[in-house]
Image 1 (cartoon, rainbow, N blue to C red):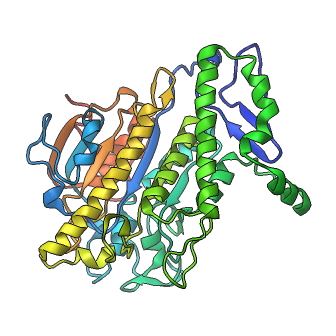
Image 2 (cartoon, rainbow, N blue to C red):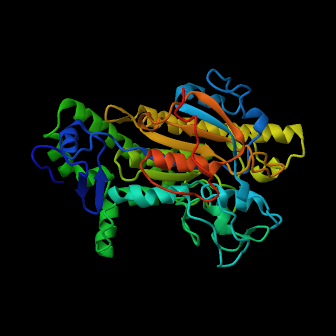
Image 3 (cartoon, one colour):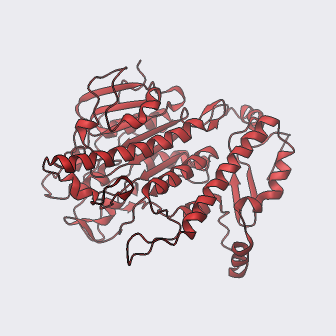
Length: 449
């Protein structure tokens, strides 16, 4: 930890043996930031993906503009009315077959952030496009420890055929660093935690690593000396902020430890992956919390989160649905199956509401993380029964530090490329991109009252 001229640099870490904990924005950092003309907190970009489409009749509001009524699936988000834009009319044209036949799930995931029609192959010659998050990460990552963080809540192969001759790389990843390099999401919360708060020092001997793991009680024990030193330099407000932040870090670690000690099985004969909670409710919340602390400590400004992979066969016993998700979406107008899909869709928005609540309750400078963020929530399919890629279910949460005017349902001209949205968001964070996949220009109405 280095403190100069009695002001705290933004890039301050609490360090211990093999760990480094970044700090949230503190008042003590403001003078230093002001001198370097960095008086404003950064804007964060997040992308949350849900698979297999949505029951659109229970998603799309009946009216546009302000004062729209929240539908059944969107209802869990009503508390965030003034922090949300519901966007209708956006499309993913290159998710369609375009002569390639079946494989809509693979194309839906692959094209969601790239706007590119991926090559139909199950071999090593995969080809897609660079995703919007990675275009942002290339620029925004110059000033953070991690250019981007990719997370997911469902395991999948990354090679082989996962959808009608399409590589599993397409269904497993929405983030692509290059045309041939997907960024598979990290699924294990423990690995994410160690990545965020480890020093990356691989020179430690195996014996030292083992001793550290054996005697360590919490990650905060390892930075206790640095913490004590820092606290003596802070005022009461900053001490409270630091205590709340470190308590959140410890709570995340505690939940990971609990999951690691849980010896329950998913079903007879199937072992639970170490460190991964059994229920999606606990699993997704833990992954969302990891994103919050990563944003809060400015370890990264770009994240992606796949609540499920395309073609997901996840079951949802926590809400009384033992049937796999994907087959249910092919309901053929069976009302019982539609009801189950609707309940799954609603559970996903409940989880997203949790993420927004944590962002909104986390202070960032003189505002909240939600005010300083732009978070896209959506799917590369609208109607999962018919595999349609038009009029996608899309939400935009946050205020982008004043560059967005939420609280409205905005309806765009049919077949407007969803990549136009990303082009606009990149522009709002100062990242110049002439084009993203099939984009045709920037969106209007995002900042209109």
